[in-house]
Amino acid sequence: SAVISQKPSRDICQRGTSLTIQCQVDSQVTMMFWYRQQPGQSLTLIATANQGSEATYESGFVIDKFPISRPNLTFSTLTVSNMSPEDSSIYLCSVDGLAGGPTYEQYFGPGTRLTVT
Amino acid sequence: GQQLNQSPQSMFIQEGEDVSMNCTSSSIFNTWLWYKQEPGEGPVLLIALYKAGELTSNGRLTAQFGITRKDSFLNISASIPSDVGIYFCAGLTYYGGSQGNLIFGKGTKLSVKP
Image 1 (tube, chains in turn cyan, purple):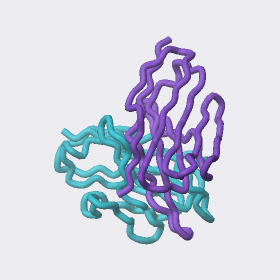
Image 2 (cartoon, rainbow over the protein chains, first blue to last red):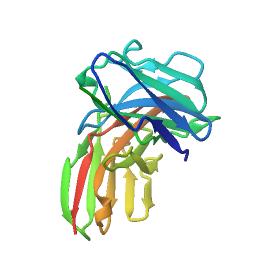
Image 3 (cartoon, chains in turn blue, red):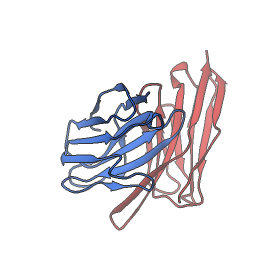
Image 4 (cartoon, rainbow over the protein chains, first blue to last red):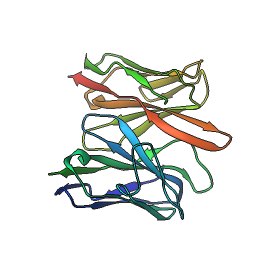
């Protein structure tokens, strides 16, 4: 499996500001995803980060609120824009498959714990 | 949309006891994954299942892919304090090379008394 790191690991932000979360993988992967995990809850997919094209967003999530970049096969960013306290969550990136095809197994980064005051 | 019903929601057991948890759905999945999440960490993949009826072990953990492809269970034998955490099931569908979304259960929180 790949080694996945996220920055920052945690942050406390003021409402109305934006935070960009980075996800770095130590090898090329086919697919990268961003999830949100609200306190005490399960994981919800925000979007699939597509290399070289716009991300694919799930129902309830929009590009203006959660812009995503994926410039290459090892790196992606998620921005949480114009934050409100309801955005306080753990944000997780995950990956599937070394470049060449999916393995249908997803591996997760350690998460970014965001608190919005 | 697809939903997974994971039970039990929480378990309080004595060290040394066996644990069983399961996930059911009205939808068919091609892959079942079981994860463990500890406080302050991301989910860690424990076991992946690909075929209906498949039984797979990883140390003291055993998981099975249900024959109907709509359910899966995870057993932990002889539990130890480090088994504490939240266990998530997740189901994945794919069609003709296109991958659907990974759907997560709500989790089973396991507490182990030494």
